[in-house]
Image (cartoon, rainbow, N blue to C red; front, side, top):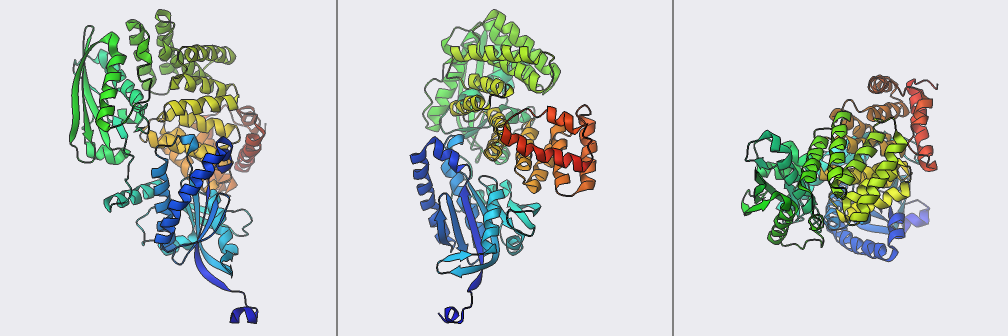
Length: 596
């Protein structure tokens, strides 16, 4: 009261946490009532955590919330706990319906007006929240200095950030994904949240007991088919085949695999093929204890391969205490030509040898041969459709329009035969993306993910499509999902590039640099990462680094070497994306690229 009488403005030093829901408008458009209900439920849970860490909710506005803490350490610990709880609550929710919070934290001087707080300290927290990844946390250097060495959390330095309506650059730090995972694991050991989803599993490469190297593709195909079938279990998290197969031929330590991949269960087995007969042995192992939970042996004719995979999946579902999605045996309902099946599995093996023109050409030939024997072979239809689209996106074809027309026809034929197959929707989504029919592509890719929430390639393609459609902020979570589902994937560089690319389009240059450099470390020959890293450095004023990155880009893609040629390769005519892409041309000019 004395302060009011003297006219002095009341101030105090406080830790401010600002949070909102990423993509809230889109969620409301999809399901207004359901989104509002879920937000209320999440806020009840979050409010309990805020109280536990000594915070005070200052106000809520729409999907946003402003919270005050007397301690920065408590604010950061609370933010990590909130994100861990939200991750747990989102496990069984389809990715396109998940409610992901972005959190910004600042330590600053604030104005006090009754129960409200105002001023630059609050504004900085709100702007940091705006550059945080969905599900992520971003803090200022003033907050970082106070928590360094006091919390068991890792941070990534994002550098100086030019925040909207903030006069001075603010150095920012992001809580690393590894830091969040470590915190969640610590919560588990103290009786808190589980660190990994309950229904998380990896199917390791099966052993080839016959010893015939020419049968290796078939043995690998059995494990790959089981990975797909297990992905149909509701609420499951199944590590992608590409990551699982990085363990092939290596000594198996299931505890280490569980820690590396964040899974509770490991499935391993063996296949022995003799003439027209198959013998498959499988065993389920608890990744935390290395205890064997279940094992069985299956003997079948090769023509019954899909029925065999269904039988294994059904037994596993019983062991895990879950209910399978109805339709687990759709593929086996049709008579399958055994020779076409063999060719199809050889084609998949060619794909899995690596991303190259030669490997995809070989796969496409094998898919064509399979379709000559069995025109209704859905996996061959979708495989060839996707392969043709890959030829187009990789510039490996001189007949772009013809290949896309054929890919469209193949995908449409597959969908007519099995409209509930996720791969059919994925193939059509990929084709629609290459045709710049982005709304249709997004609808098909969303359908693929609903049918198989563990299809990591669909998340990457959906992220790329949304960015091209001017929805870069939404794209970020899709790339992150792809990385989570296949963290050791040979194509992991695509997910890191996607996040860096989207961050650059959004103007988050500090975060873009980190992810683009990760992409290049994984694949030094990937020219798009060098291109956008060049522009990002230039936009930050790091001209020497930009010149070095430009030289690396021109080594990997000497043909597209002017601003005009970059414009000709935009891959999208969406006005929002084209406006965002102007930053690329501006950055490349600063780096020294010629106009014509």
